[in-house]
Image 1 (cartoon, one colour):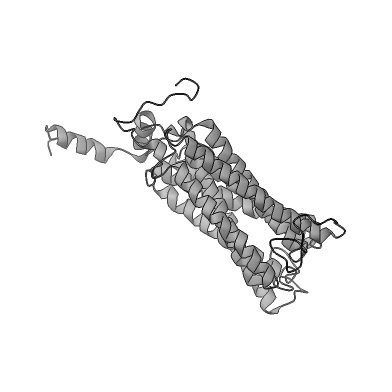
Image 2: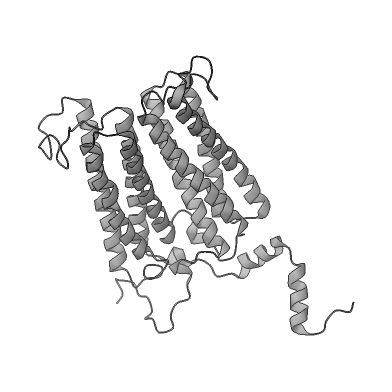
Length: 362
């Protein structure tokens, strides 16, 4: 069959013959560079600070649970035994619980600072409108009240297992919003992303990892709260002789199996992404997630065979949160790289918009 001489027909024929690698190469060379790097540095720094404080807060929450300090302040909330700052710290559980509450206040302050800086610089690239940092900061500020107020429910109901899981879900949701805010501010590798530089297939793998990571984190919290569930399986990697049996063992084993599936999935992602030629920030996030996944298995083996020391349990909990954060970042980066999500910094500037000027050179 003769080749069409019509220019449109020729373009279609050439497009059909293109491989995914050719298409991605052209996108990286000619696609619009994400302008996230032009998001003001103060906003990006504030986003990193808020995300770091949120990580510290949720990890310390796990320490509260592991150490049994959830009722360290009794049934008083938001004060502690009638004081904002108790005049004595004779009990370790009181100090741990109160430190967790102070970290919640520090988290609110850091999110408020992020919101304020984004509002002050709202005319800058990537701040205002859909896909901008400001809307995400507003959401994070409002969402802060959910786990904070539900902490009161946890205290007033005697710290039951279901309340702990809901509290952790709310905290994990808040930290996910802060991850999105940091990416929109040009952090976590987003500044080097180009639109259409990644494949849409990468989104599915990253989203699956994020969903499984959240389920594992929540099941971990449930396992830690149900009496006997944390030590129900005597062996590793599966339950061996001497296990407790019953519902507690089923909860522990379900948590383990889902965690193993997650780690296997995380191990496969960087190799699949490298083969497809995914952009560097996405591939880097996949490698980091895999590293945390392997480390998590090591912590779990040490924890079970070593008699469940509190330090290793805390490291196990912290690594689980880091996996969740990395998977959320990876999922959002894949959506941006594939073109499924357009952040404000990638949108074409309005021709009527005033040119950006430095605050010092008005």
